[in-house]
Every structure is written in structure tokens, then in C-alpha cells.
Amino acid sequence: MTPETAMEINPMSDRKQDILASRYEVARFRPVRQRRWWSLLRWFDSSLTTGLQEGDGTRIDGIRVLPFLLLHLSCLGVLWVGWSPTAIAVAVALYGIRMLAVTAFYHRYFSHRAFKTSRGAQFVFALLGASAVQRGPLWWASHHRHHHRYADQKQDSHSPLQEGFWWSHMGWFLSRANFPPKLKAVPDLVRYPELRFLDRFDALVPALLALSLYGVGEGLGAMTPELGTNGLQLLVWGFGISTVVLYHATFTINSLAHRFGSRRYATSDNSRNNFWLALLTFGEGWHNNHHYFPGAVRQGFRWWEIDFTYYFLRLLAATGLIWDLKQLPAKSRGGWSGTARS
Image 1 (cartoon, rainbow, N blue to C red):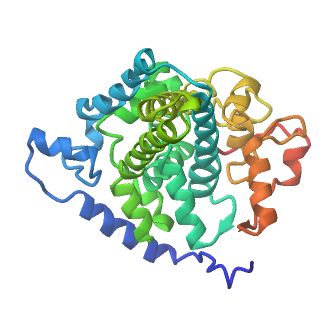
Image 2: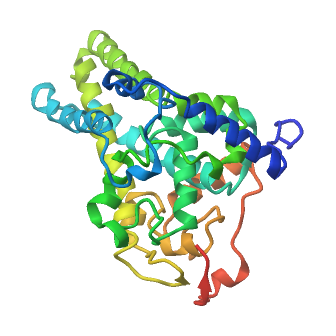
């Protein structure tokens, strides 16, 4: 596959990108009537952001907390639906697939542009990332780019050094101030209407996943009862439990990887390398490495630093689905410890 035949994504001029991002941002902040029922609609249409301004600071948005809380409570459904090897296998598989979708696509591709791909593959990557129930690609990438720009400074949305463990772990994305995406940080992504659609209706893909799991479970229960599963069981295990575990594994990079671990590089933040977090998050735990060279496609800089996401991306590159993987500068391989920007 060549860039020409694969419709390689070519960058627009900075000015055109900024203009498009500004127009889209204005559209998202259109005036609406301030009523509670309108706030409820944000569960389904995240463009309804009126009143969610930066001045809200650390104010938690109760409307957004409710679905997050309900998803956690859904895990208690295991007391009624029980378990089966099939349900557990589905939960584990969806954890792995969606963790890779977050680390490889939402993080290394959409946030850092660590490789190139076709527009069609980009859309599939966004769909897979959206299934992780961590909002849309524009929201995820824009807040992550903001984090790198202000890592562990007062402006950082989720620094444990600034606001503590619970805020950095999950409070920040439940706040009113951090509900809207920071669109000026992602002008290169805003120009794609399909990404804007997924970002606006960020509950659509998770809802389809949940319905699919229920349907598959009912089908398996009817056709192969010996598997001992059903629709509700797959819904609880495959969607509820798998998603909640995925949530908190991902969140540890914000709350723990800036507190615990070693520092190979003297970056301007407090990022750390943590072996256990790297295993849990398929390579994201090599966080000090990442903050030293954010654009690299790999985060395990040494052969012994396990980075499953990088291995997966190498496999995709071998198939021709992605290309131009950004590699490390020579000095990053030699234990250099000078100050680097985040």
C-alpha cells in the first residue's frame, strides 16, 4: 500500500486548520436555554456545552457523574447473572482490544501522530477507540495534548501534584470545565467530519457495543446452551466489568505514573517509569520515557521495557495498514539525562 493509493492524510496549512477549529468550537458553544433537561441531553449529544466554561474549575458535573456511577454499579449484576468461562473470556478479550485502541490509536496516533495511515483506517481506529467509553477522539486527543503542554503545572487538567490523587484519577473528567474538548489543540483532526460526528455523539459506539453483547449472549444461550451464558451475563461481564477495569487501568497513568517509579530523564514534569503500570496498560507505564520524547511510536526505549502497543503497531506496519512510524532520536537510547521538554 502506498500513500497515494491509501489516500494518505496530508496536513492543511496552520491557518486553515485554526480557522476550521475556531468555527467548529463556536458552533459547539451555541446559545441554548439553561434547563436541567437540556443538561441530560449531553449524555447523547456532547455538543451541548453551554455553561461549561473554564471558570467552572473543579466543579463536578452531577449529570455526567450519574452514567459513570451507574456503570460501576452495573458490575454488581454479577451477583445475579453469575459467571461462565465464555463471559470471562469475552471480558478479557474486550479489555485487551480496547486497551490497544486507547494506547495505539487514541494516544499514539490521534494525540501524538506517531505514525501515518489512510483516512479509512483512521475512522476505524476512532471507532475502536470510542468503544472504550472514554469520550470521542477529539476530546481525548485535545485534553492529552493540553496535558503535555502544561504537564504538572497549574494549567494541567489532571496533575496529581496539583490537585491530588482522586482528581487526577477521575475527578478531572467529571468536572464541568473539562467536559468540552479543547478544539484549538486539535485543528488537524477537526477537519474530518466523521471524527467530529464520533466526538459529538460519543455515546453511540458504546451503546451499540452494549446492545451487540446482549444480542450475542442471547444468541449463544439459545443455540449453544452448554456455554452457560446469556445476554445479561455478557452485558455485565463484557461491557460493565471489562469497561470499569479498563477505566481504572487507564486512569492510573494520570494518577500514579506522575508519582511512583523511576526517572531516567530529567523532564520538566514529574513523569515516572513504572514496570507494573506498563504491563497493565500495554506499555504506557514507561511514562518518563514518553514525556521525554512524546512523538515516538514506542514508549519502552530498552529491549527489556515491555511495550505491547509498540509490538502491535509494528505488526500493523508489516501489513501496510500504517507507515512512517516515528522512531527515537539516537540520544534517547544512550541513557542521556539532560532536561527535555514534555
